[in-house]
Length: 209
Image (tube, rainbow, N blue to C red; front, side, top):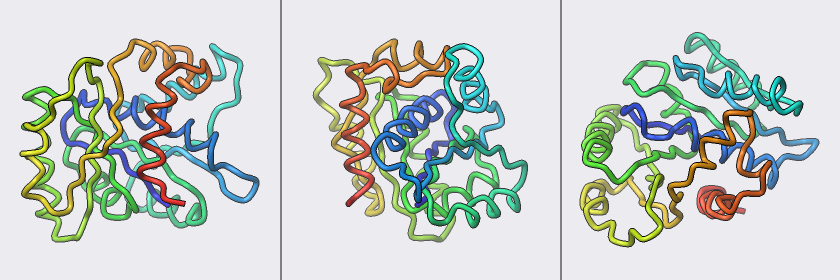
């Protein structure tokens, strides 16, 4: 199964979302027969760096990760790990390699902050998806949500005209632990942060037994 974290807008918490979901899925679904791996095609290589910090700063084992340099390498990894669970972190641009990662995904997760810039970016991203002429379903995940915010009608309006877009029920709260943990290569699951429950909710929605 391939889970691609994608959004054409930078700063939408794609890498943060991918990192914590990766560790939650490892905890819940990794077995001796099924690996959970990271594929980093973000030009900034944020998660590749964080994964190295996991070893150097926290003395923990790095997660299995790949950094394909082109589409051929990406497809080779997808084929090699066809029986595993793949979390693919993409960059914030409309690039061919990102489109391939999206088109090959079993699920596309689109992190979205409730800001005007992110919502405009979502509209553009949906246009790109439609232009790919494929029946690609996207799962919009609200992240960086203030704990008192409860009205998300404006976001629902943006995606309501797209039958292939779903707003996930789970939402990731705005907490410093989302980012502070990553400074040492850790996830919220390593520190047993309360956000684990939030990420578990996302995992339960996107991975059906």
